[in-house]
Length: 220
Image 1 (cartoon, rainbow, N blue to C red):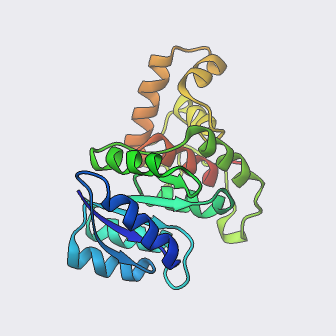
Image 2 (tube, rainbow, N blue to C red):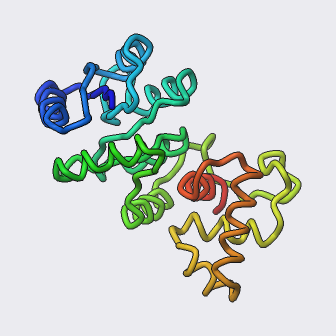
């Protein structure tokens, strides 16, 4: 497994590289200092997984992840962050990264997360994501980014979501899981799961976290 470590702090960058190189089956093929440097290294080294800090001078992890995933969609991107970066975390989840980790997690959790995304999984902490979504609702947006209520005729809802799908999308934005949504709408978990799959397909979203972020952005 080939890994690229991206962080503007040398100590963090070299420390992670040392830890990961000690793991069987893992090799840190390079390091980078910001998003632009990361993209250049991905182009050159073609790593399987990019472990990237979110807040860096120059090109940050949001822009770096977007650039990498646009040109190298097979590359897995795992973001390292702190809870204080709520808005940035949600931005990067919208770009399709394969997960995020808080920086204060133990090294074995980081190793496990890298293995998970390498094998096609997603690394998200549901409790943290739910908290982030709630925090985002409290953050005043710039006028150009103010959330708005979408109607079924809006162009921003491709595939014309049904009323039930819009209800479920709004509840996803509150951080509710399938069981909680089912209980609130008096329907089965299986029905919720089907609606979630349908609305994600219509909106071109990869997972329920992206759906939740979309909901927060577009629903009051």
